[in-house]
Structure formats: C-alpha cells, structure tokens
Length: 297
Image (cartoon, rainbow, N blue to C red; front, side, top):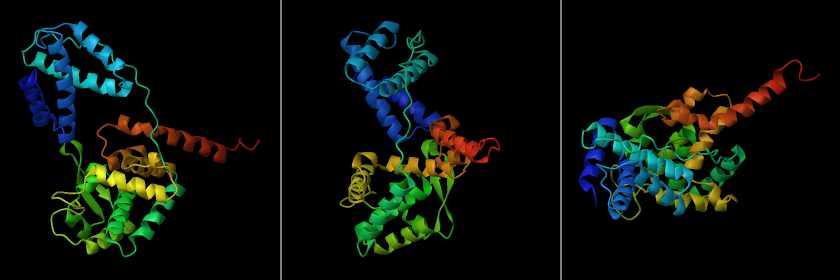
C-alpha cells in the first residue's frame, strides 16, 4: 500500500496522543489508503506536493457520488495527516492549508415520537414472554432508550452491569472518557430478566449468537428493524442511533438542560449536542404561546 509507513505513524499518534477509538482509526486508515493510492497513480509524493492534486482528488470524490458530509470527513482526515507530516518535519509544506471544505448542510436527526417508542416497546415485551432471544431484544431496547448509549457501548456492556446494586452505569466512551449514566428501574429489571435467561457463560451481557465475543452492532440493528416492522413502523426509520436520538429529544422536550443531555450522551463538545436545538426552539415557542400574558389578546 502506498505510504503505509506514513499512515501507520499518523494513526499511532492519534491513538497515543488523542485516544482515538479503534473504529475511528480503521476509518482513517481506509480514507488515507484511498487518498495516497490516488496520489501514487498520479505520480505525486505526499511529502512534496502542492494543493492542486488534493483539489483534484476532492473533485473526484464528487464524481464518485460521495455526499458533502462524507467528503468533509475525508478532507478532515487528510488535513490532519498533512498537518502531522508538516509538524514532524517530514514535509516542507501543508498542501491542505488553502483548501476550503465542501459546504455541509447539517441534517436534523431522525426521531421517533414517544407514542412510536411505546409501540416498539410493547411489541418487544410481547416477544419477550418466555423467549430468551426476545428477552435480550427487550433489554437492548429498554437500555438504549433509557440511557442513550452509543450502540458500540451498549453491545459491549459487561455481564456485571446487570447485577450492579448502583442506579447508574460507568461507561467508557470515545477517547476513553468515562461518564455516569443513570438507570431507570425498568431498565434494571430488563437487565435482570435477560441475565436470568442467558444460557452461556462469559464476560459479556450480550454475548454473540454463534461465536466468541459480544453481539455485533450490525446484528442488533438488523433485529431492531424486525421489531420495528412488527410494531407497524417503517424499518428504514428505526435504528439504534435513532433510539439514541429519541432519548435525547424526549428529554429536551420535557425540560432537560442541553448541558445535561450533552453529559448523558458523552459528547465532548456542546456543538455536537446542538443538533437538537430544533427541539428547544419548539419548546420555547410553546412556552411563549402558553405563558405570555399577551398571547390571549
């Protein structure tokens, strides 16, 4: 692979100095391999190049059908790579410095209503009656909606989480940052019921079906879409991430502070949580409409 050593050095720095997660490192490796492969085919050296080849590469991404959001993420990865080469003295210049990023339109997150989540949970409870697989699905959904965990955090919960006497979980999220996540009594009950139906030993609360390790994100997402269809919901509207969005949006609709929701979601920056400000806008409009003394005139 062209530039394999450079990619390895950059990823090692991200892991050691910035605590980048394994999924992030894997995605960056793919992006940089694609980029350096394109440079090699054009006869360009990443250690001695100007902005032109990078602009050409970005234009090619557009012809390949990448969305503006995906292209922006790719450019962010490439910028970091060239800044690293420049900072380490491996390159005399940073060709990414004059490059402007593609304009991104930040889409509002897909969100289920409270009634739709209730329907999903009702179907999961029916399927859980006397069935170990159904009990597992109910536990996954109850936990996800009650805590707003990332799906990667959820499926990797240790078995000990189900028997804790505490009313919270200690979760290690992105960058190795730990946070406390409160547990509802319903979520704790769902974990205990699931644990009682587990027929295999091991360290995971949600062990994989047919191999060692824990349940994969893909398997959970597939089964969740099946539950959504059974609840009369469009499967393409339901995913683990959509339930995480529902958790945050429903908290804000009921008066939660944005900073508290940021902490619960494990967002390092409040700007990430601000995708939910449309919920706050609607709540503020409703408050003015219902409470302002002149609104009845």
